[in-house]
Image 1 (spheres, rainbow, N blue to C red):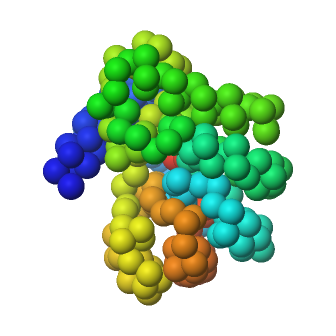
Image 2: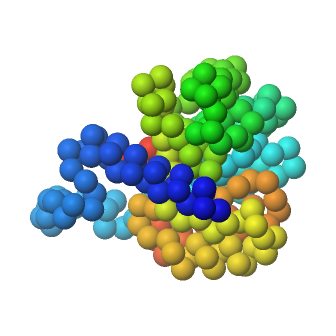
Length: 230
């Protein structure tokens, strides 16, 4: 757990640096411009954005059920996939892509990339990118390193953008969907990135309930690129 917290903290610092590079200022610097009423679009007035993300898939037992539920609710999500799982279930990945979800890299075998040599870490990244490309015809642009552990020097070897999260209900630790839902609804705010997994019935059920509740509160579900760069 200490390693996980350390990696997430390091990753958050990296995200802040990325944001500064993109926007020229830090999100928490207090330098955001004060918007005039005329600058606020109708969309801004009616919808608060939030991103729902799923790690460790595709799962042969639960991802298709999740995809159907997302389609029914008109929700676009982001999936960070494992390369070895992509190779096992390419048809699920194809459907995911056809449904318009954003697909990212989560390493090939869910390993701590920071504990590997640079060469071994890049194999994990490259093999997964290739597996996704073979199915979708597109190389992923975003990566979520397992445990939030990234090697900063790999930024020089890949152009991929690291994506972490703001809300983690630890859905992989419980089979109680209600617990997961409560944790998310208690913490979530506008422009947050929610971390879930599509590897259990309880997590899929929780995802649907989270979507239904937040849509009633006026939230719009978007992919992570819209959170990071809009």
